[in-house]
Amino acid sequence: METTQLLFQPGRRPGSWSSGYQGRPVQLCMQRFCNLCDLKEREQLRSFSGGKLEVKLTAHRRPAFWEWEERPFYRAHIVKVLPPEFPTGKVVDEGFEIDGSRLNLVVYRTPQGVILVDPGYVGFEQGYDPYVGRLMADHKIIASVVTHGHLDHWNALGQTTGPVFMPRTAYRLASMHASWTSESQPPQLDSALRNARDNLIFPGKPVLLDELPVNIDTFHLPHSIPETMGLVIRGERGRAVHLGDFKFNGFGAKAKAETIARLQQIAKEPVDFLALTIYNAHVPGFVPIEDLVVDALTDIMVKAEGRVVITCFSTNLDRVLRLAKIARILGRQVSFTGAGMQNCREMIGFEETGYSGKEVAFVTGCQAEERSFLWNIAQGTAAMDRSDTLVFSSRCIPGNEERLREHYTRLRPKVGRLIVTRGEVSQLGLQGLGTEEVFTHVSGHEYGDGIRLALEILRPKKVIAWPQTSPQIEAFRKICEEVGGIEILSEDERVIDI
Image 1: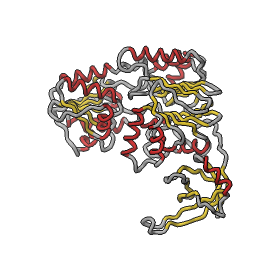
Image 2: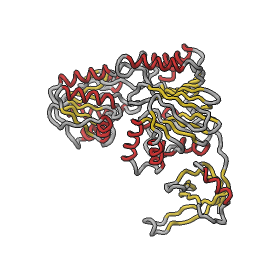
Image 3: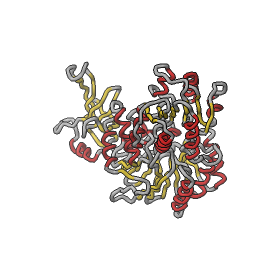
Image 4: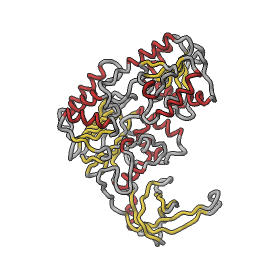
């Protein structure tokens, strides 16, 4: 029998706890009377939400008739519930590393526990993220708040405990995604989404946390998905503004003025801390209004003789809805192909109208995702017509350049016209491919002048901005120097005291 300290997470059955040791699963003993367990210590598990325990391990094997073969495991008998360890606030410390540029999670720490904002990670597909798991071991989680529905802002939600607050659009998208990937997701994700269903919020509605000296107000922000919100978090030790993913311009000219007015109202009180993304800090100007994209795509639909096939991110709900309505006005039938686009159709409540040569088809595959509609076309397992006009209403995600370049190369001979957004030909080296450039996409992440304006209005003392990669961080440092009086924190410093 060996005594050791292990990190325990909620198990698959309610009230159970599990861990791992030397490559074998560990189950916490829950026998009512066990002479190997300290029963007084085990009483503390009534309020246990995951963390480190000192345990005695006994080796066991599941009989072969339980599963296909015998499976060795350990049973852990509790010796002591260990107090939480409070980290330094850095994502990187001894023996533990994570790429802070891909992490959307920011942790706001209060004396009573922590509030997780956007528990998610770019490129993380499975149901477990090590940093969120570590935070659960080290802190009591008061609540989790999701600012919008993009996958990388909630894909570690299944590891969290406590109340979950999220907009209705985010909840619907998360529920749909969970239904596709139920086999790879932890069972706690279902519990988190059930909790979120009872705590749906919308921009402008406060997050209500009972009996805690923390106020969280929400406000609308333009982004590439509906119901995106920013947060104003006021604690005993400071006031934080969480912008995260944002831009000033949305649809119409008034979105920018409305966003400026909201930030000016927030800035009437001092801002101790600001969190925001800086993906486009090196790009001058402001993100253009979404209307320009709709106008350009409308022009393509008007002039095209045959079918128009449009691919974009399936969460770009407003853009798809507007284009689908315009297509119908132009007398074109509308269809949606691919799981993501079918979910998009359901989200926007648009009915398909059949198939014909004069059709507008919204399809998946703008990033060459495996098994998407356009991926199948590129691989030759499905076909398009030489009279089709294929439009990419998207931009290449950084790091996906080689894959997308090959995607375009395979697709080009299969269609009559291949249209990409401005700048994509030079960025991906598509010269000579016969690809056309049109203004088919605007980013959901603000450009350099927009970031500067946000800093000038809010005047924060400290800023955590990500990704801190080149050329974004150099441009952002220059902006902060010109605004003055701003301390830039490392993107690895994600635990903030308020």
